[in-house]
Length: 435
Image (cartoon, rainbow, N blue to C red; front, side, top):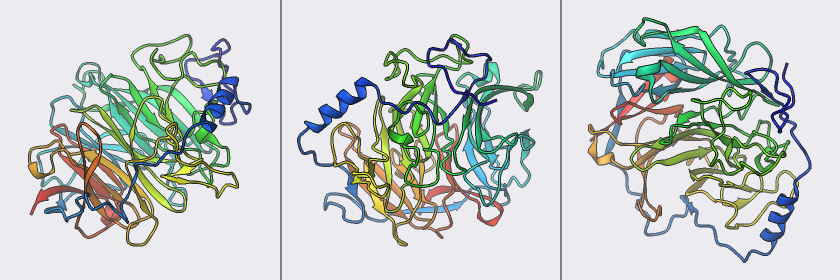
């Protein structure tokens, strides 16, 4: 049964607990104080770069890069996650949105038949008409080579619109070659109010904690006001310690999470909030930066750098603009609401659904070193963005020409090569090479 959470942690009955999205409606006195402080803030100018009207200093010249099939003979249906395991094995894992995870040798460009790592399709639901559900996230434990643990985020088939965050292990004695479907340990169940805006990226940070991106719950205009309501987990990024347990939770909450100690009315698992629907976030290992692309509502797409305790504005703002389509007053720019690095408008040329990517750290295409590669699902456009390593000012946002199929997801090998997929043509994987 999906039940309301007791914020004092005194009434939890099982190792796996569930979340009621309704949450608490009333704001705490602390929130009132924050609003009063916000009202006294001076006029603030957003630092966001609108790519449609960029400053002259921004390099927008075409990138001398080609996009080619990484594995020309390989097709995997709806390849939604592409990742190495960080175990030095040279394996590349590709998860299908339908619930199967496959594995190939990263270096075998002629592979035509992947090996099945684990089949979870018996517990995952995916429908073409509700295509923001299904298997959405996969991350391997930083010590996977030792403990064989990996983590998934998927929509369960056992009841409508419920997302499940789970831990699995590999089959005993298989030398981590196969995942064990019977080893599932549920960490969290999230009742989603609608089928869209499920988020779903799971990733380990340099601190060893697991980060989970959650959308606002769906439909449109954030009807539950999840983005700014800290009594709900929706519309946020969570940060949990999966190596320990706390009270009767199947994980622990890091002591330095920004909402720890804020009282019974908030979720201390929350790391950042004001999120609409992050479609892919990723850590850049050398810098520790957490990149996230947040899909917009009607007008704007955006790319952010995520910070601890950051409020990214939704649904007071859409990218660097006041959002009022929900009938509210919205909000002007202010330091307490973090605007994105870049935004672009909803047009046929630019696109209408951003797909977040990765910072390239491979060796095969050194021209791309340090560039954040990302694209748009609708227009099929691709870009390479570079920021100043000290100031984080955006210096370049350069287009990468290709055939402009829907940009489904990005992934990265253990050697730092960035890959991209489309669900077209039976599900294809691409890589980036110098012209």
